[in-house]
Image (cartoon, rainbow, N blue to C red; front, side):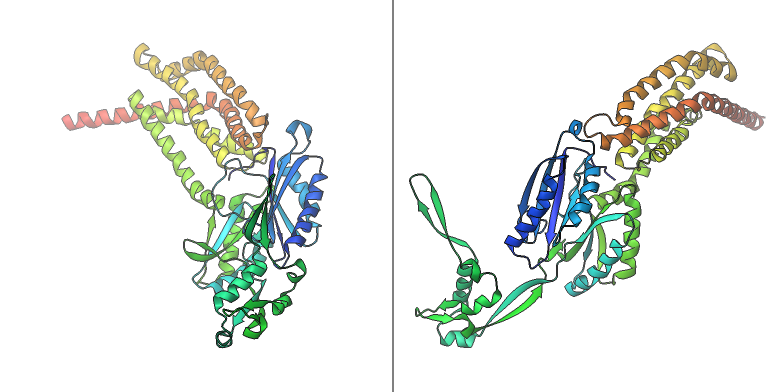
Length: 481
């Protein structure tokens, strides 16, 4: 839909097991960073663990990569991503998702991949049961990469269930239990030490050896209202369970998102169609699904772009009809558009460039450029017929001879001006190249055919118009008689 652009930057997210500690996550993230820094195309790497990830959890992180200038590296941004992905997969215990940022960022959820498919349901259990089978089907689709889900269901947690009767008999309230747990594991700042040259924050927490195992909770003491130290195990039971890491919401409903990227040569429309089929086969009626972010805008936009192109052609036809006071020969001017559109699509197919937003803009620009040739011929021919008494054949023949040079000059100027875009010259040219290819291909194809087809259309439509006028004249005379 929106092509990527080699801006010299790469983005990446990392994801590890849900029960990983912060220190272990740092080690895994460092293993990823070490591989990235060995790549000769990369100039610098910045890494964030924890709050930098898509869901802000300990088991996720973010990577920002600055590439060397394009003149100092052989590979483009997308090629570097394809080269690094297999290397990063070999790092055990962590997943890395790299991507090149799109030319035009479009809003959506922050996920590990570019495109999002979101499930919603009033029943959280239905949502949890639907994600694993759908995720398995989506991963089996050929042409998709970086498939992941933001629903993480197996996060270990310790449930502290306070016996309120025992706690009350020992003058311990729930607030005191909560304060003891917060002081032990919350890493809260309790004071600041000021010195002449600096200041130091005082953070209260347990020693690291008491934070590694949940069994250490049984050694924790709670201070009662009377000042006594009561063992936590005397007033509460500890249960180890699993629960979702986060529960996301969209439009007020619990949601889970499957994110994905498309492999080179795979169109977004093909990917969305196959994902819809997979969702239809798996999801129950209580779960609704929709695309979000770029994929949502793609579906909405491309359903309207065809109508937009048709409306632009109709408006051009009406304006030409008003200017020439004739609603027949504007069709002659527009007769070159099909060949231009066919040439643009054929060129995109030959160079294996997908029809995206940029190439569609090229098609719309092509409508305005190509009709210029028809206007030059038809305007001259009509003027010769109306003011010099020429026949249709004589008028269009003279128009071809006189207007050939300006038609070639203007077309060559447009071609030469668009050629650098089509060749992909300059930094970030990957996104603009489809636009240039569409215009150049359409101009070349239409230029070859316009000089031959436009005169033929002119003669046939002129003969049709003359026939209609004769029929109307005979009808009028018969009515008067």
